Amino acid sequence: MTLEDIKSFSLEELQEQFRQQGQPPYKALQVYQWLHRGVSSFDEMTDISKVLRQYLAERYYISVANIEKKLVSDYDSTIKYLFRFRDGEYVESVLMRYHHGYSICISTQVGCKMGCTFCATGKSGFSRNLAPSEMLAQIQAAQRDNDIRISNVVLMGMGEPLDNYDNVLKFLRLVSSEQGMNIGMRHISLSTCGLVDQIYRLADEKLQLTLSVSLHAPNDSIRTRTMPVNRKWPVEELLKACRYYIKQTGRRISFEYAMIDGVNDSDVCATELAKRLSGMLCHVNLIPVNPVGGTSYRKSKRDRLERFCRILERQGLTATVRRTLGSDINASCGQLRRKHTEEGGTTVEDIR
Ligand code: SAH
Ligand code: SF4
Image (cartoon, rainbow, N blue to C red; front, side, top):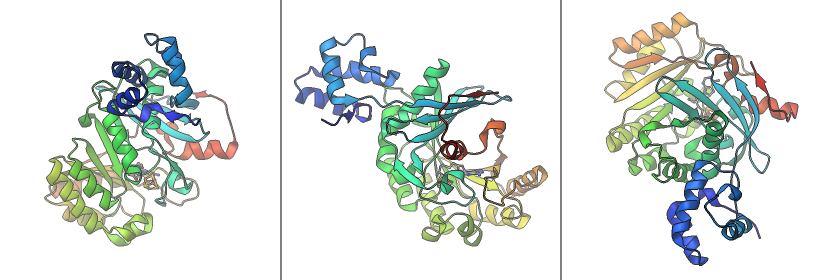
């Protein structure tokens, strides 16, 4: 009998399964709470009878993220994890400590199909979608490893969340459920490269999460060069969907803009960007691009970033030059997995 993924079920679904199997549905709540506290085996569910624990173990598996590698930043205690799932696939997550608490950036797919030219994940191709339980497991593993409670979640690791729409939506409902981890939507951000049809879908869910849109260029000719998705959904269509998202949710959109030396960082680009975004409820995050092996992209200079930022502000936009946490270990999401896969390594490391 193939085992089912018990942590991807909602509480209602689990109660229904228990009912069908002749188990008392109130026990489903107990099991659900254990699962969302991050246990890795049914035997850890100490207030569940041995008989039921055995019954569950014969039908289901508990999805866990095993720590394969761990890099701790010298500067700011940011931790980057390489996690391994039960089928041997790897993803990366990054745990950051802010003054208001802990935030984790998690992956939603193993690899990515979108092929952005500046991105390490995009360069490694696509392997598979993550299940809702595997997204939860990344948070739980980091909490357990550090004995902390994480308050903020960012879907900005490997993969394109809106290309795994149903599983991501299910994850959002699970992680925010009161009987589960209870992380409110206002503490969750989702980053997309701009899958316009899915942005409309998400807007109609009217969730209070923060949508980040990876724009990275003020016009189609530059954007198409770095982001193939722009061929299908050009900038104007993307911005139209963003306006709809704002209208439906009342939430401010965050535009991500990776500054690449000589590609998208001129004064002309800043002015064009400001014009395009004018009047929108939004914020622009400027990030120096993280150079990835196999590309010739270089970071824009610091004074270029600041000048670009001032031009946007003068045109009435709010913009910030983003602080890069864990810059010594970061090397941008996707690089750790790529390196690890190439080396075939299996050790757990704590590099300082
Ligand atoms: N697929 C989603 C989310 C994962 S990528 C998306 O593209 O939005 C998370 C963020 O990292 C995106 O804003 C992406 O554009 C950015 N990113 C990818 N590679 C980068 C690099 N080399 N330097 C800076 N930002 C990068
Ligand atoms: Fe995929 Fe995002 Fe990387 Fe583009 S930037 S390849 S969408 S993970």
